[in-house]
Image 1 (spheres, rainbow, N blue to C red):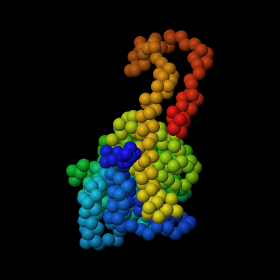
Image 2 (tube, rainbow, N blue to C red):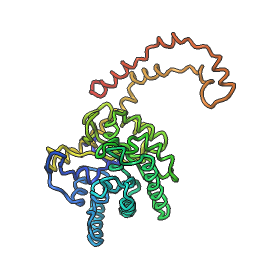
Image 3 (cartoon, rainbow, N blue to C red):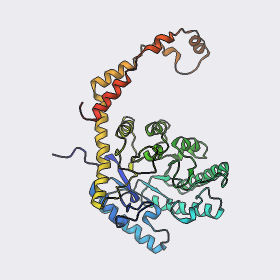
Image 4 (cartoon, helix red, strand yellow):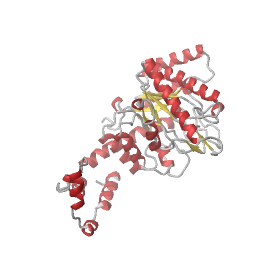
Amino acid sequence: MADKYQPMPEHKFTFGLWTVGNIGRDPFGEPTREPLSPVELVYLLSEVGAYGVNFHDNDLVPIDATPAERDKIVADFKKALDDTGLVVPMATTNLFGSAVFKDGAFTSNDPKVRAYAIQKTLNAIDLGVELGAKIYVFWPGREGTESDATKDPVTAIKRNREAMNFFCEYVLDKGYDLRFALEAKPNEPRGDIYNSTTGHMLAFIETLDHPELVGVNPEVAHEHMAGLNFTHGVAQALESGKLFHIDLNDQSFGRYDQDFRFGMVNIKSAFFLVKLLEDYGYDGSRHFDAHAYRTEDYEGVKDFARGCMRTYLILKEKAAQWNADKEIQALLAEINADDGSMDKYFGAYSADKAQALKAQSFDRNALAKRGMQYERLDQLTVELLLGVR
């Protein structure tokens, strides 16, 4: 019997080279896995059933590679993509690993560093487009401070805007079919990172010269680090037409950036996220920006990757079950009952409508006495997730 949770291309499950290629190093310990080449990682992802592979520029091409070495690496990578059928939906630039970015990239106080960061990104955009990427992600990992004595935050915002405007114009000038997605994070590796949440990024985008080219790439772990409800942030991005890409993983609240397997910690949160994406027809990649436990060998890495995709598909099935559950849906209909008597007060403003609403009499005490039945609704949800419905 076929496994109904087997990933298929239409699910658009992707992983970054840096995810399955994570070698198990952490701030307190040496690597636990030998590195694999980008080509080897493409074949690994093909084996587990992924749809695509994403990369930072230097995940694929070392930062000090010669032009000839670069061309050979890219040719070998393209062959692996052709052999496996994997695609490259997204690319990004590493603007955080090299010591040159110790004070940031686009917001660095050193103008030569800012110019180098733009140059590096232009080359990386070319590489991403060459390999088929349609989305380009910006994660401002070093764009921040440890002390506010060191940078003027208003100047930093302006520098960041100037860089994004430059890249938008570059893409338009080149005729590239490419859009940008901004990824927020509150802290780590900097003490405080600018544009620290998805909401910050959405507001920033509206100040750009070409906001139509720029959306967001929210990440579960990053919003949970700030103690925020990730599903709400994604809903805001989705409703505004700015959910260009998404990073799926998991994270305990109040911890460092753990990048756990999707659904590993907060299964109910993961359920409502999947339900949101599926209910509203999100058509982009489901990208798993996570990595296997440090305890694992590469067979364990495969287990990790399969687990991310399998959990998503199980929760997708659970979301459909929730939407079809007669008791849950009857309860929702009761909770949201509307006899239409208030319709005349909603919608676009008019002076007559405002005047009529001011004259309307409401029984505040009677309204307050209504029980909403949310306890029952939530318990039914928990029972569904636990498999007893």
